[in-house]
Image 1: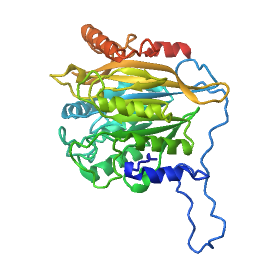
Image 2: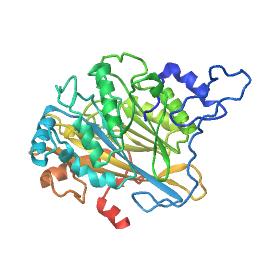
Image 3: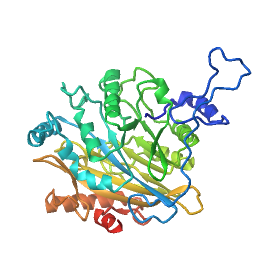
Image 4: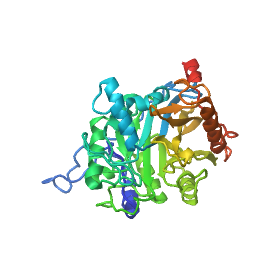
Length: 414
């Protein structure tokens, strides 16, 4: 269900666990001597980790598979819900009948991208309130839970939840958010309701592979979690140990998510680059990405590992001061396992630019093929797309093979 997270102080314990001769199943604990059992009696049987499926031709969603098996993962930026967005959801509910709030029209444009991937992961930036409110926006968020209902409806299968706003509504808000995710069948990692859950890696299955997600945030806006295990805090060594744990429990692919950076920047800061490079150098991560800056950041191929430094906002209300706040990036990584069954690698990295528009508020793709039609003015589409291209490719991503994601090409492949 949830992901695993001991803090850096627990890393030694985790590494010790990794040294055990046998690995237990996802979500299971290490077998312990049962009450009344003789010390020399054989241990009680416990389920073993679910084996990775035997290699077979599995093309996966997305581009034509260049190897034995492929799978693809779509990643999106912050779901950052402000009052103008729940006002829009109330108005949309009046049309759709999905009372009292319907965020699905806001997210509808994402659907063709999500359906073109085997796994889609969102980032829930804030805690959610009770269904009927009261709600709160910036700076201490407590937003309508129907945003997660909409995320599940358009096809997301999981969300990361560690951010600088995770404890805005305290333990109650954190637990409520995870309960809503659970009720919707959305997997999650980054924050936890119990210490036991914090030590279980998030591993999500596709038809082709088992995918681990490791996430952490740089801080909590000066607040503190009630318990040290409640929120994954950014520490490269700890993330590496957790990635090893995920692989020990059967993950074929491990993806790292870094919630850090300078707001509205166009380049990653030193914390982002140092952390991402350390994760890549460990050899435990197959892809690394980030969110938090509310702006699109570059993509880098660092010694063979793709790093997407910032996905910007998935949804947010429009900022009159920062145009980049209104823009986002979605990325699809196709992973391939070669015919010899060796380690997985990224065989294709595609991205699509987006912008939030209003009257009504909608997520709007401004990719060259405009899969949802022209939902922004021609001038705005051109401006956002050009700015996104210049930032995304500023660290050589285009030369290294990252390219714009055209849904029309996916249809041709199918």
